[in-house]
Length: 191
Image (cartoon, rainbow, N blue to C red; front, side, top):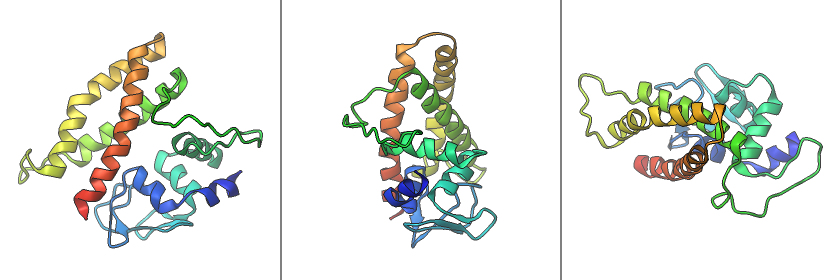
């Protein structure tokens, strides 16, 4: 299964999906949120020339999300990229486009939990310093988005953990679609 996932995925595209913005084949490392352009990703793997080391696409996701086991990273990739891999080795590829399919409660909880982490990182990473202005196109937009939406996502996540919440599932679906949009915008902003 691991080899099949490695063959199906391009590590550079996976890194872009999770927020890496490349400029001349280099990006700021999304794993350790570095400031230098010391991260490189190609089809078969990645290298961080600062502190994260190198590896394949599974190791990249394992380090990015802080998973203890490669299997957890494989599950994340299987979910996000709809690889159709199952843990028992049988293929169960979904034919419903992921943009049209609503997540179930468990999936919605995982999506919201990922967004909580992402929004906290954005609040920290894109917070304006004394010399920056909030209207800065790139920095201000992500910071404002994180400030505006963190409490909503936290609230929906908490309600989903205690009871069935259709609005939380809808929010998770919208955030999943939004993630695809912002990755394209981030790439275009740096080109």
